[in-house]
Length: 544
Image 1 (spheres, rainbow, N blue to C red):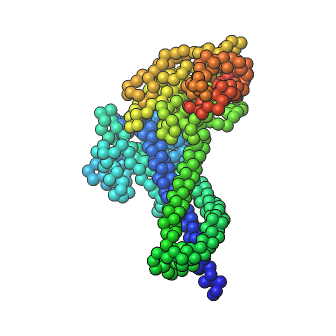
Image 2 (cartoon, rainbow, N blue to C red):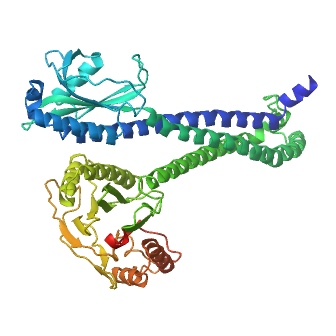
Image 3 (cartoon, rainbow, N blue to C red):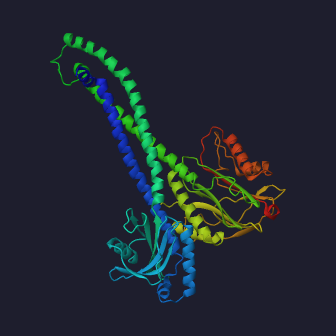
């Protein structure tokens, strides 16, 4: 009992215990709020991405022929549309796409127009509905969303099913209108996507935050224990004896007496009340600021990882191909950046190359970059020339560009069997081309308006013929505009000179050489803009 009373009356034990308890509570709060905030952000992004996917699918549906499909007419077009939707369903990794015509009298019934499934996505057991299959609306929630879409009160609607009763897995269903050429809603396209991807995105974040919070709690508790004992307990005991002596000889009033169960605080109450309040306030503010800084740092680090993984970063990218070599790099100026590059095989004979630079920097530019990358990649896979693709991307960005941002884009499609490169430019820097045995020179073409600046902008295709041994280099303006400590720019001329220094090297050696030259030029000056570049060497049929 005496030991217990001693511990209870010890200021050190009480302060340390309270701080540890506060840290535990604070960690729980941070984990909870961080998890909720992150989940909401991921959920919103997941919903928006699914909307864009569904909207892209709806754009392929002829809204004028919905009734004709149901009547058994336009069979060829219907079959082509069904095949296209089935391919799109598999390519987008969604479990279900269906188009329904809803009874607009009370939105309580609908008839199936088109239905494709991919049960391999989430081990589902869906059976496609036949054309003309009729069914009552599932519930009032769906009826309300059908009405909003038909009456043009919403661009899209989303239904989350975390718990299902039909034996299927949890999923998200996004609903978008299918419109006729006159703008009337004639049907609704529904896209179902498994929610397991959303949960897999949230789980690592929760684990990281919880582990970080626990580690910080233990480290902070140990540091506070040492600090309090050294800086407060021992000095206060010495000051307590002096304060008692001073109170007896320089008394200005009745002592406060036992205002606390702690002996030290009772003896020093009159002299240290203000100091204690200020110190506690200071420590609370310091803990809050430190925790907030750690949280923001962890989120930005996670965002940087997500952005880095959104573009191809595994090289060699196509080790089985001998007809070309490719290498690319992206170095953001901040934690995340607004540059993008991408490349992928559209089919066995066509390689897509693109690079872009978003206006602005930081998180807004990074989000804009990732959305643009998704829209462009999906549109490229649907076919068309670079000019047609950029026209579509510009219209899509303008339609949803409330932040008034824009992006410069260079897009090229290389036919590998012939070396014919078709490209279109939306306000981006001209590529540098090096013929075999020659030097790098700018390949200037007609530029279009930057994407996102104005609706209705049109772009032109330009062609160039690559031969075996030719190289092409594309980049963002962060390279020629890299600045040293004296505010001098690297310049386009120096960039071309550097390219020609390494023109005989492979694409990866060329980019590594440029990195070294830029780093040597910039020195200790802070990086002002994102540095992004891509180099392709066309080896042609000689290497097959």
